[in-house]
Image (cartoon, rainbow, N blue to C red; front, side):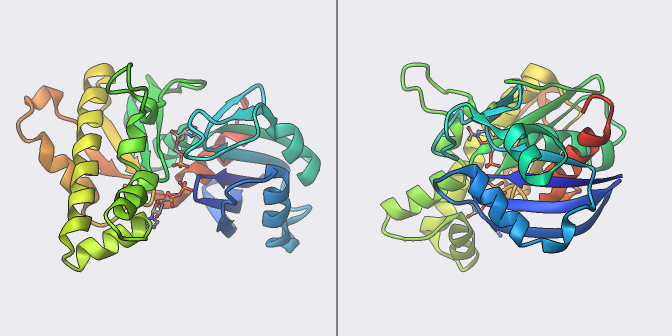
Length: 281
Ligand code: ADP
Ligand code: BMX
């Protein structure tokens, strides 16, 4: 059975035909900053004209929260979504088959648990370091859904009401660069750091420090066997090692084990396709 799998992030949208664990074909486009998600998906499908009739279900892994098929943003800075958006109904109508949808990091957690770096564990956490920071939890072999795992929304102080992702993820890196007179995105910050720019290295160091703190706290809360790191920033060369280096003073039983997502940027696509075909889908 083949699934049309779609991953809508704050920066990019991926579409793929997935059969089992195999991605047969894939297309991508930047995520529009505003407008109707229906037009985004219609645009994506025009980039894959030969796909119609080749899939039996649609599965969407999306940034934000999905409840009863309706989609909303928790943090509109990561992606602004029309409130209470009827996502599965729109997908089913455009694709002509039934649709399911789940949070992007939850879907990716399942993909990695089932077919990637989480294989062989019973308890693992997936963290995407991307436009924002998303999380998914597999506990005793079960994926936790709903609000569970929204680690990017962790607050350092209830009074200032600012989620950690607004001080560590891709959108923040671009803002931090701009505030120092460098008009670039997070990718540009990594490039500048690799060329020896101290301002860029400082931004990455601060992000790594905050994410290390987050991981240490996740370890205390859930004791996962592994914390699997994905997202384009999480998977940027050297970033995981930089976070892990900050754990050296922790007692060994409190120290997180960080590993890179084996499915890379495709964890969400693969995970949602598996879920779409499973009985619970
Ligand atoms: P999404 O948030 O849409 O799921 P990504 O996982 O690609 O997408 O994360 C997007 C963020 O990653 C953006 O802030 C972008 O600037 C940054 N980024 C993209 N490519 C790279 C790269 N090669 N190195 C570092 N950062 C990157
Ligand atoms: C935010 C939140 C999460 C999402 C995470 C990663 C929104 C729109 N999104 O914390 O639901 O999992 O970002 O999203 O509130 P990404 O776009 O960075 O992959």
